[in-house]
Image 1 (cartoon, protein in one colour):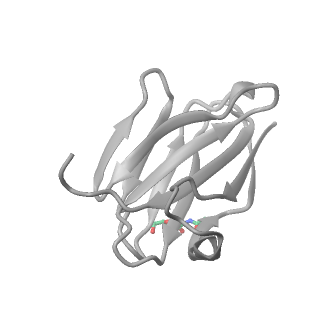
Image 2 (cartoon, rainbow, N blue to C red; image 1 turned 45 degrees about the horizontal axis):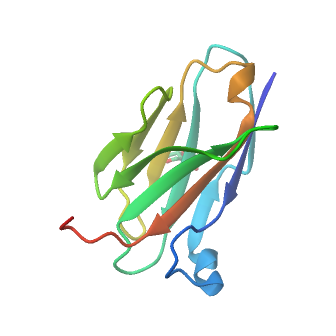
Length: 120
Ligand SMILES: *[C@@H]1O[C@H](CO)[C@@H](O)[C@H](O)[C@H]1NC(C)=O
């Protein structure tokens, strides 16, 4: 049995704690059998924020950055078995799909929203 917890957090230095009320993640807890996939949704209601970042925190490990959705474009870290889809704009849904579930997939998954300027 694989347990996936979803919590919400914020990582942007400019994001105050009051804004964390405006990042929403569903479902709160999931139980899956190995081999399948788990979908976790994240949305936010912060005007102008356009990036959603995903993190995984497993027991005995450091927080792992999985990747992010920049408006509608995903960028994944090398070697992660996830997909990021959807849209990172206000009131849209960004979905993290954790694939090929195994015992190693049991973790707390975090999403965070922030503003990212279109020009690098
Ligand atoms: C996640 O978002 C998708 C697409 O909008 C929706 O169909 C699905 O019901 C949502 N799942 C949860 C758990 O909110």
